[in-house]
Length: 255
Image (cartoon, rainbow, N blue to C red):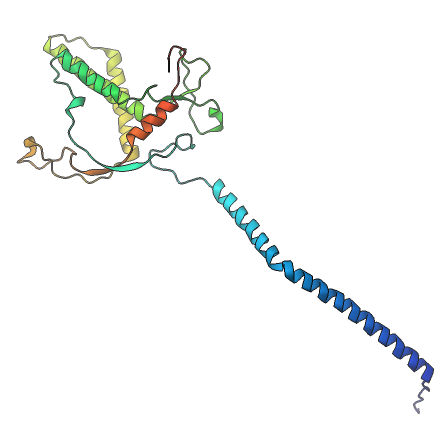
């Protein structure tokens, strides 16, 4: 079957060419507007990128600040007590904290030295919103009505040592005077202190290496009394200053 070709109308061709030209002009105008938009965006592109990166950085910092800080051994886990400076300290003999176990003058002086280690307020403070933290129930004292009372552990530990020192002095003096009566309450307090201090020592676990004692009694005997070694310690004066500032104040106390 022979193919048939339609005749092209020259008028239609001219009309089509005109339409193509219009489409090309419209496309070029659209492209020009797009390129102009890109040019305008190029001016602010880098400031926008920097602003976006800064926003990401701020988000990261905010997240990091909300992360719990690493806890120190012997530190308070809720952040209610600050971190204190540390120092290297050599343990030395100190005769102030042991009496002669013979005279009341020496015994009373020793007791006062122990008391002088305590801050004003004896390390007790108020935590009114205690339910918001990981804490045991608070103590309540008639002396401090409405106060939710907590004790800083180091001062409880020193209190126990002071009690044990006084208990030994009292017991030795009784024996010297042939008095063999026993204070059952003091014995129970002593038992509590032995166990409490055992827990405290095992918790902190001081791993300082101690060497040969230089005391005369160890001159020809291998042994250590703990003196001479360098320990890493918190600055005790800083702790006491903070505890004094946070102390419970009774109505009768005058600042």
